[in-house]
Image (cartoon, rainbow, N blue to C red; front, side, top):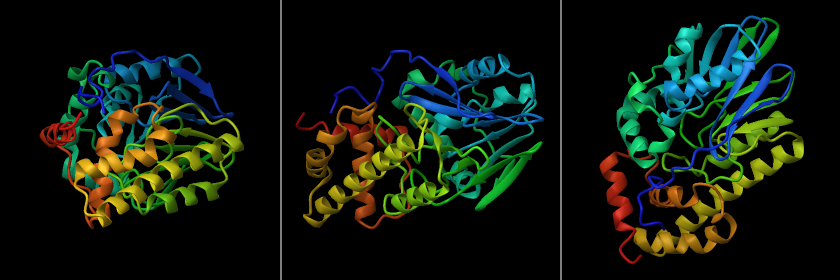
Length: 321
């Protein structure tokens, strides 16, 4: 594990790509940095994940304005993490009427939004360009429990909470007529799954529910656009393998009475050969193992990460490095 905390040393700017997926859908991907999605309907635009700051969001808006001048009416939050939500205020000047989130996401913002904002910034400052432009937490204006449907003119847009995984409030956006899915961090590709706030036992069942939709194209939380059914299946398989290998290793460590440092070493034996090369792996793994050990020990509701707890954990796992 790197001695430098989390991703503070990652200063390399990533190239963004704006890819058309279907008649109405685009993906905004960033070489392993957080992705976003765009849906352009008959009467307006919907954003899937707001990005980390208003300044960063305006870069996405500039891409959208190359192809449409329709108002950006909706922002959907796939989950509560700061890197996904704090850019929302930039869309208000573009006509945004609703910030949509699941009940689980709203509850997590109430419970831990302030802690998460500070924690995430300290972990990965490059992702929060012009952090001073963030006016505060992003609060949903429209909250749903399991699913809701928007009609953007004739285009049907389904917004669904299919189960817990990356967080308890994970939300996907699905275009049934075009078979395009925006998964948020429920699915990753060529990047580590961050599981510090996850529900690992439930995650594979939620992935199975996503698979049942039959998506032909998918924008994962991180990684490239998945542009055909084979690539979609590969992304789902990759994510399932990551979370099940992690949790199984933690279960073994807990059963053997290992402390966290020993559990980390044990988990690496299974994880490093398969995933050690992917983006943000060394950043994520300490948080992942800590949460996996908690869940395997019976702590169902993830403990809140604070900036102080982050660094205490990181330091503890450096003792033999």
